[in-house]
Length: 339
Image (cartoon, rainbow, N blue to C red; front, side):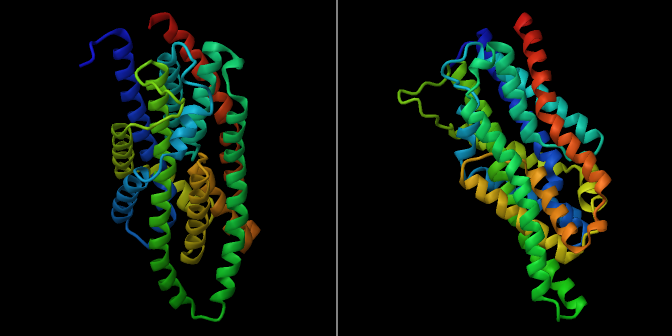
């Protein structure tokens, strides 16, 4: 049994903060998986949240590739000093940013917040030289490229689907696409858990290694089973509580969503998230799903998309990395004095 040394106490605090971030992530990002299906009445809010919670849990337990990327690609946890305080500062920054954007109903990125927080805290502690630039750039590239691809795929999928059902009665296609949307939303929930929960697994593992609680003779990062299970449960519980402010934005304020467009948006975003997860790259599920909705809307009628709101969301995306990075660096300076 571990004695309650200062490092153990900080580790316990880090794990609590990480799981709290995961819970808030699930709470904040429920809209990602269910907003369109609720908006089109394919699912009731209660059923949609239940499905999203269960499949987030299953998805979170399925993969570990993204967790290993987060745990080792931004900085080398085996070489960092004061790593526990670094992680604590990063999590504090990410949680604060998530709560601020949730309060204002802006679908910002939990992924950007966490990655910006880790990078900022590392720089605050050890300078820019401690950042693994190749790994960090590959992560940022994935975060930038994925929503662009999602926009294009959403645009193409709605065009193809619309052409396939062009001669079918409207009421029949509506009913059919509501059923298909349940399947697409379920896949989206699974993929959300598979990518997003792994980020918390990675950050806890990062803390365990940098704090000297885990070692590896080969330098390979292994995700402990208890970390996987606790992160998966925390995200599922967060999802079950829902984020209704953001659901309102995602489900209706960007564009008017019909069953065919909701299905196309859900299908395209689930596909993109799954592909990037398979490639072991973290993405912002918020960015991907919002971009899919924008792509679908733009393909049908450019003016149907409320581009003013989309621009407001884009600004939040752009400022998240630097804002959380600066906030995390400031948090590290403060924590380093007292811890």
